[in-house]
Structure formats: structure tokens, C-alpha cells
Length: 337
Image (cartoon, rainbow, N blue to C red; front, side, top):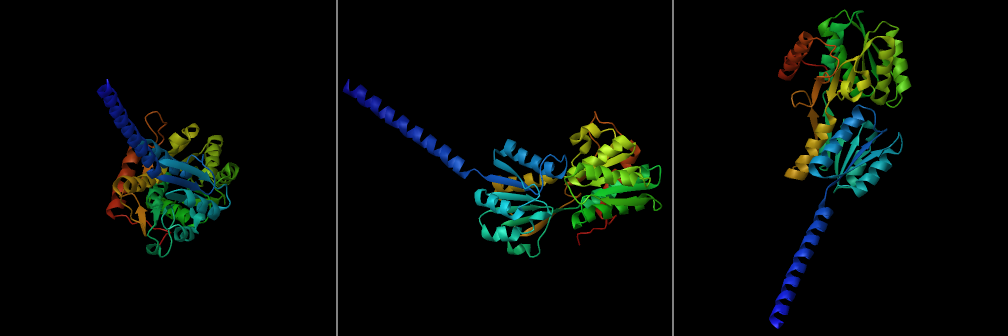
């Protein structure tokens, strides 16, 4: 009886040790889980740039089980909210030029990794915890301009821009060059919303361009660009989407969006963070250019259920132009230096 009791006590002790080890392992795993903050200057829900960044965060949650928080600055307190995010997260992903004080955050939080999306800093090599991602939106915009010029019935095409920053200028310079490559006689008209978060401003800009006979209008204006689609639907002209495949993300306007210049912001964020968390690879202190050659810039036409407004022949032309850009046979001008 004593032997049986002793044996039971030993077994209970062993089971207790295993249980404690198991609990300790769970705690360690939770304690070591990487936390990520994706922070935007305005809000999510733009069906474009910001939402592409959020899609990257959602993929990190789903595939890698990371703790991802989304922060909306609503047009104010950019530095303060970035600093607060750095204080409580392992990786901070500021999205947009408004976070230009990022070097101060990188200095104050040397153990936090920063991924600045769509912008660069001078002397980035001084900040080993900072990676800047810039995109060759000029390459995709070249194809958009080419398509618009080839399809225009009036010989006038338009562009609605969110502001006059270097990034937006990069969209425009590629668009204009692509249009001229297709037909030098085509005129490009541009209007500025001066905001990325005002649908009505986008609509008014598009209407002003349509009054100048623009029959295809490219938008690079965030949420404001949704107003371009609304104006196109009401006014009987066509539009070109940006950042995401907006024939899918803005599906209600599928019948007026001919294509989208896709800037795979979410994929780039995902790939950098996956390399860090899964492979322990971090290449901070540098600028990474995501372009057509690396697969982060592309054209999109929706899916099998989408209304196809661009002919197969024109799509084939665009595919050939894309190859020439990647090969360096066509040099697309840039506003980024």
C-alpha cells in the first residue's frame, strides 16, 4: 500500500513538473511574440494605399500569428502617435511622408525596428533599426498613361493627385511619359485635391477635368480618389485605380475602372517582417526600392467576374512594355532622384 502511494505521489510530481514546464513555455512564447504597429496619417478604409498596408498586417496575423495593431492618426499628432507605438511594439510601420520625424523615433528607440513606407531619409545608414521602402510607381504609371492615351476618344486624359509631393509627382511623370510614348498628341490635364481623405474633393477635381474633355482619369489621391470613380460613373467617362486592384476593392465602380496601377505595399511590409521574424534577417540602415523587376509594381484588371474594358491586344502591348521597362530598354523618368 505504501509502495502504491509512493508511486502515485511520484507520478503526480512528474505530471506537475510537466504541467509547469508547459505553462512556462506558453508564457515564454507569448512574451517573445513580435508585436507590430501599422500607423497611417489619415484613416483606413481608403480602398487603396492605406488598406494595402493593412492587408499586409492581416496576412502577418493570419500566417505568422503576430500581434498587429492598426493606428489611425486622423491627420494629427503624427510624431506623438509614432513614439507611443514605438514604446509598446517591436516593429513600427509608419505609412506616408507625414512621419518625417522618424529619425528622432529611431534614435530614441534603438531596440525598435522601423519600416518607413513610401519615403526615405538622408543618411539612413546611420540608423540600423530603420528601413525605408520606396516604390517605382512611375513604372506602373507609365503603363497607365500608355493605356489611357491608346483608349482615349477625345485626345485628352486626366490625373487627379492628392498633393504635390515627390511621390505623387512620380506617379504623374510616369503617366505623362507613358501617354506621350503612345501618342505625343494626347494632352494630359491634372488637378489636385490637396487632401487624401475627401471624396467630394476628388469628385470635383474629376468633374473639372471632364469639363476639359478628359475621358479617362487616373487617380493617385487615396480615399479622395473614390470621388473620381463616382464622377466617372455619373459622368460617363472612365478611370484608372491605384495601389490596389480597385476593380476589386472598389467593386461598385468596376464598370468605369479600366485598370489599376498596383503598388504592393502590403506584400512588401509582409516580406520584410517575415524575413525578420522567421529568418532573423534585418537589413536596416538602407533604402529598398520595390519596383516592377522585383514584382511589387504591376497592372491589374480585376478577376474573371470583372468587366473587362481593356482589350486583350492592349493588355498584350502593356505586358511587352513592362518587359522592356524591366530590361532597361525603356527608362521611365522619376521625380524621386
